Amino acid sequence: MEIKKRYNDLILLDDNKNEIGNLAFSIIEDKLIVTRPYIKPEVRDKGLAEILMQEAIEFAKNKKLKIASTCYYSIKYIENHKSEVKKLI
Image 1 (tube, rainbow, N blue to C red):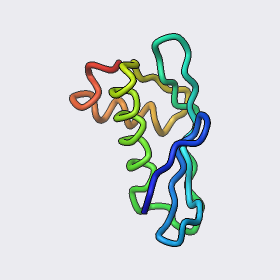
Image 2 (cartoon, helix red, strand yellow):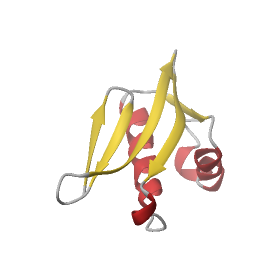
Image 3 (tube, rainbow, N blue to C red):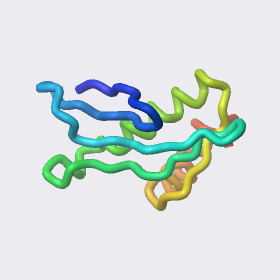
């Protein structure tokens, strides 16, 4: 599996380089705002959205951005991982 950045998306690729998911975000001022993670239905429930969220957090840290969200999944992820993201919220 591999994650690549494309515009304002993080793209999740399988071992054959096929896109199996993505995480869309916007950068506004000093915030990375997660707007939507998407995982193809046939590969859901394997923790792939979590992998994309972790990559978004690392991206925010590297760019010295705060992190926020407008979608249910990533709001819950941030709430459930406050110790991991406390400096970013």
